[in-house]
Length: 130
Image 1: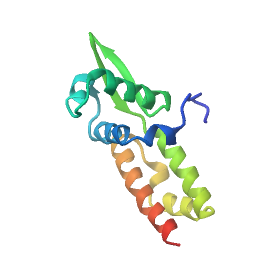
Image 2: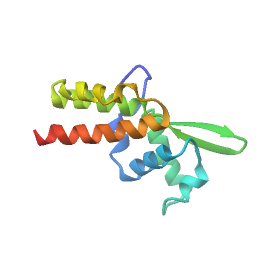
Image 3: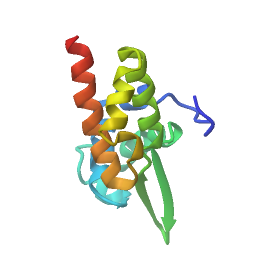
Image 4: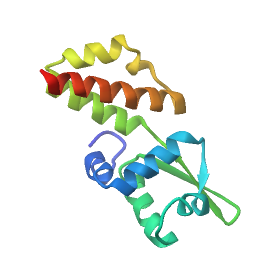
């Protein structure tokens, strides 16, 4: 874990396809209320909330109350950290250099999260081909 005292591993959190889809949906918007997220799935509000709780425990999702509504947004920092460390381990440091050269280390906000995820996938593919 990192200094954020995350109580759940990022890999555990993203292992489930529903949670990966939630991450994707949150990456596409600045903030989404629970009822809008629930509408994207064929499951109830409680089930979606449980998945969001797991993502929150991993530090991947932040929430805030607006009146009676809870809004969620992506926090890509733990994912970026995990991806960077994983690729560094897999590529013996070479991948980290590629990511820095591609701008991954300087990504911020929503656009940075989208770009970083794409860069990670490309670099992971390169490492796996070796």
